[in-house]
Structures are given as C-alpha cells and as structure tokens.
Length: 279
Image 1 (cartoon, rainbow, N blue to C red):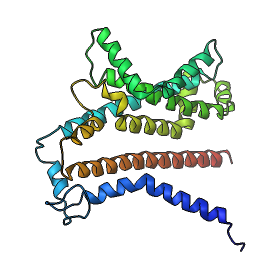
Image 2 (cartoon, rainbow, N blue to C red; image 1 turned 180 degrees about the horizontal axis):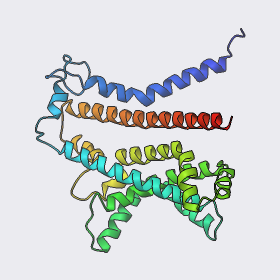
Image 3 (tube, rainbow, N blue to C red; image 1 turned 180 degrees about the vertical axis):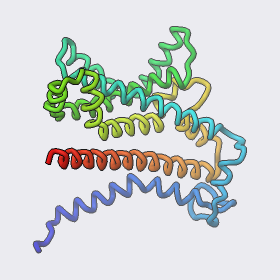
C-alpha cells in the first residue's frame, strides 16, 4: 500500500477544520441548552437538566415562540408548494425555445444576486404604494418566492437537460395525450427530484430572515422572533429553542430523504415487474 502524500493530510486537516467551523456552533448551543436551572449563557455549565426545554412550553414573558413557529411552518408549506409547481412548469417551458427565454432566464437568476434586504425593502415599498397590508402570508410569501424559485428552476433545468425524450415519444405513440404523458410518464420519472425541490423550498423559507424582515408585518416568523429574543432573553431558553428548531430541520430533511428512498424502491420494483411481464 502506497504511503499517502502530504497533500492528503493537509486536505484532511482542512476538511476537519471546516466541519468543526460549520457544526461547532450548533453543538455548542446544543450543549449549553442542557444547563441547570441556575445556568447561564456561557461555559462552564452549572449542572445538567432539561429545565430550559420545559420552560419553552410554559407561558413566555417575552415573544410568541409557538405562534411564530406556526407561521413559519405554514409559510414554508405555501412556498414549497408554489415553488414545486412553478419550477416544473418553468422547466418544461424552457425545454422549448421561445423568444425572450434567455433574458427571462437571467432575470430569474438575478434575484439570487440582489441583496436579500433590498428585495425585502422593495416588496415592502410596493405593498405600501399599492395601499396593501404588509403581511407574512402575502408580501412575505412573495419575497420568499424570489429566493426559492430560482433554486427550484435551476434544479429543473438540470433535470430536463438529462431527460430522455424517448419516453414521451413512446407514450405519444401509444395514444397518450399531452396531459397523460406528463401525468403518467414525466412526473413519475422526475418525482425524486421534485422532492429535492420541495426540500429546498421549505428549508429556505423556514430559515429565511432578510427577505422577511420588512415584509412580515406585525407578526414575526420564527427567525425574526429568535432575532428579537437575542436582545431580550438572557437565559439558556434561547439555546433550547435553537436546539429544538435544529432538530426539527434535521427531521424534515430526514423525512424528505426517506420519501425519496421509498419512491426509488417503488420505481425499481415497477421496472422489475414490467421486465418479468415481458419475459
């Protein structure tokens, strides 16, 4: 076995430092959230308990934690659903070249370049000019779509770029209508990728702060509520909240990944059953 080069150890050390830098704060907050009842916001820990997690479920003197969580969850589902639908429609539309497609593509991508706070400010100003109420379910919803839709479209562009059109041609040869081809051929094939778009849409919306800052109105989403708590709450209950939201995020990611695995297994089983039927 050949000895490893120095570059390997250098890159391994760099990657280890990167992982520590990336997840170190998360683990630190998770550890400090288990402080004892008399514990503070820093090390050393003063006992170990679940006191601050229990405190989360009691009446809070500051903030509306669970109301903001419900709003973020509902907004995430709304953004996720619209992102998936519009991404699929946009991806299929861009398969056929049309006048202005290049300009439209760059306009969509430009939304990722514009600073998020400027998008939030612009959407808020438009609603004020039109004399419409700034609310998390309207202006906040629209500003977040400017963040999630470009990612969803980029994924769909990559998916359809590698999509084998012979499947659609075979369906049309068998008499399928355009809608039947999309429903029974295209969507089942790209279904695992749609789960990825849905995951992008939900997580980006659930964690978004800047584009919601000036468009949420009188009711905060969870990121805004946590930010507000950093100036008022001086106990590890803030860390307990951060730990629970992190666990929830990993739970959502795990659920989506499980759905993808199940869908791929079903596709393989259908393929094997079809192959046996032809024998």
